[in-house]
Image (tube, rainbow, N blue to C red):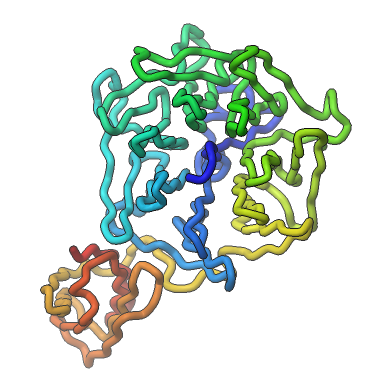
Length: 412
């Protein structure tokens, strides 16, 4: 990516102090997530509906239809590698996936030193100098190239079961920095090549996001305020409404750095900018439950828990609601009949079932209709799609007597 930052975060509440808080399903499904990634004329957004492809110029939102990610998996993060080629998708309960523009493949971490099963809660990711991904999750983070796991932060506190790598980024010297949510204990850790485990750097609160500026200073959003850590002097400066009247009272949960070196933070109702000398905050009607921030040239993008995408440019806000702007077919739980689907390289799809098929619509990954056919009520039908010989991810909407089924399929 064009800068040393990967945004990922959790929204905390003042009363969130018990273990039950971490197990709350609303917290799980909504308040985590590095939700925004750039894709040229588009953004990738991890929304409540699933992974969205958002066209910046038209505000059109299209659902990324896929078949390999389980339907019930909660997508909590999305990243592009350094070359801007592969898209990595992190889920809460089903590890991570790589999408190369055509095929979607699942990454399964090593179980060495990891007795808990898959590396789930994949909140964070960073890419080393060779563009190899490192994935951070619950208790561990993984060097994917070597398929080796490392403990996020050793925990000697018997009352702390939480240990999450919430965000990760490399500095200019090749050191990996990790924003840690270990409740009130470790909130910043580091790793250098050759180390056996992470090094605890700062303790006393919980971090949700980090960004590294051009001087290799580390900015963190934490439950007690915004922190700025200098690895050279080992000084840690905290900024909050307690010591700075220009900072509104809220908990800031995500940060990013623009091309001019300004650091941007979001915290529920506020977008906050630090220009290396002072803080300035912005908000507008409807700007609420801010979850993620992404700097894109002169534009700052914000995703909210209400599934709104805000564009901030020239000190003005515009917004679009994903649910309202969503085009294509929304993937839903398939409560319809099951069908057998086969295909050949010539572009012929064959569908059979035990009910009378009335119509079929087939959509590509962008949500565009590529084929449609109607039938008088047959159990075995065919549909021709010449472009299907190229392969890819497709969604089939099959109408039959008494209902319809939505089926996801990969054609390789």
